[in-house]
Length: 304
Image (tube, rainbow, N blue to C red; front, side, top):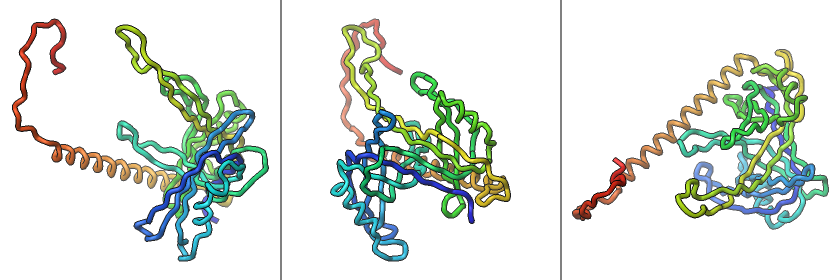
């Protein structure tokens, strides 16, 4: 048995939106289908909206027809506005923010889907290694205290790198907080939890400083998603199957950081190519620029 890398989510809810796209995979030369669905789950009286992605190649790695391919093509036709049960995995994904810094986020990748008449719910189970201590989670805009979080990782299929997930602890759940505190960084454990995804509407002024009159207001829809821990198993010992030794953790973390550096460098190179291309392609004016005669004024006439 290899390293502990249990990874599963289970969701019951109603599909309220679905869309599919197909394209040729240039590497495998086979068609791929990607279907993205929005699932509404009413849990504890609150509406949750989850985005789940299904993705499959037309041909399997064993060069056989893939049954999931045709099933994913028909999700909108067969399941839109119906209650379903979805089983899948959490997947770490990456993107670059406005300041060209990498952002890690978790994507819900569905695998199996079927009709259901069960009660709405959304849960997950992860097996792996504790990667950080507990930190406070605060709103970036208001600094409001939202709860706690910590980093939890697991080896990939080849066991040559890590997936890293940010797991949440509710602000008022002292039992879970104290339970997570019993873990040390580097401990191997299994964590269970609840998925939650809330939609809020924020009203804001389009003009923060008004010289006269009043500013217009607009609304922005915000999606807040949480991976709330609901329980955890005892930390494994070195003789237990699936145990992550300190040497293994060190090797996997080093590989993870190395990939981070590679992705950042590729992104920086890409941005530099775009910058150079925009300079080269920019039109150069050969016409003289007419300037208006200067007028005496007490106002600032130039920004430089």
